[in-house]
Amino acid sequence: MDALSPPRWVEPGVLYVVGTPIGNLSDWSPRAEAVLREADLILCEDTRVTGLLCHQYHIKTPRLSFHAHNTRMRLPQVLKRLEEGAAVALVSDRGMPTLSDPGQELIDAIWQESGKVTVIPGPSAAITAYAASGFEAPFTFWGFVPRSGAARSVRLGEIIESPYAGILYEAPHHMQRTLEDLKMGGDRPIFLAREMTKRYEEFIRTTLFQITETPREWRGEIVLVIDKPPKKSDPEPLNWEDLDRQVRELVAHGMHQKEAIRRIASESSVSKRELYQYVVSK
Image (cartoon, rainbow, N blue to C red):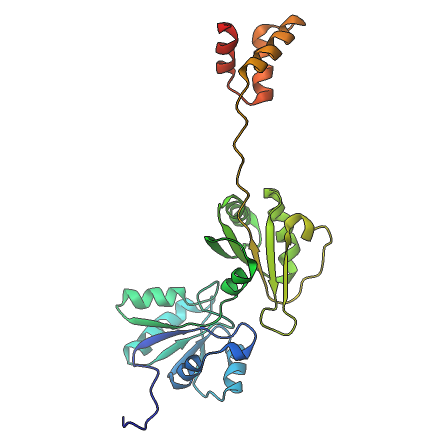
C-alpha cells in the first residue's frame, strides 16, 4: 500500500462487532461505515433492516441473516469463513449487538477457538436511557422480561429485590402489564425513554404509582429504567417495659400469661421466648 492509498479498517479473520444507530442515522461513526463497506460479510439480525442502512450509505457488502432462530446452523458457517480469512461484521437491527440481540454465542465460540474479536463502539439504547435518567450507579441490565410463566415471576422478583437500578427493554403492547407487575415491590422512581434520538423522542421521569394511574397506549421502542429501592430506615429500638406493661394489662383482664405474651409478641414482631424471659424476670 502506498502513502496515497486510503487506510484499510479491517483485517482477515477478524469478527467486527459493529454498533449501529438506534434511530438517528447521524449518530453512526465513519469507522463503523468503513468497516461494513470493507468487510467480506455482514451478519444481520434482519437483512431487510440492515439493508436499508446499507442502501442509505451505498454499501454493497453481502449480508447474511444471523438471529436467535438460526444461530446453531450459522455458527459453523461463520467460523469457517473466519478461519479462511474473511473479515466479518456483526450488527443487530439497532444499537450494540449481543445486548438482548444475537451474537453472544458467536463471540464466545470465537474466543473458544482462539480467534479474534474487536468492537466498533456505537449507540446503545440501554446506556442512552440510563444516562438520561439521572439515577445513581451501579445498575443491572435485565433485557426483555419473560412473557409468562415461572420465568416471568422469577425475573420480576429479581428486579424488585435488586439493590441496584435496573434497565429493562419492553415491547409497547406489554408495557402497561409490566409496570403494573413491578408495583408489587412498592412505589419506585422510574424513567421511560421512547423513540430515542428520533423526531418524536419522549423522556418521562415519574414513579410507578403515578405512571399507572392513567393507562396509556404505548408506541415505539421503549426502555424502562427503575431506580434502586429506598434505603430501609433503622427499626425503632424495642421498648421492653412497654411490652411488659401490655402483657400485664391483658393478664389483669383475665388472660393467661402465656397467651398474653404470645399475642403481644406476635403484634410487636418480637421473639416470644425473649418477651417471656423479660416478663418473668421482673
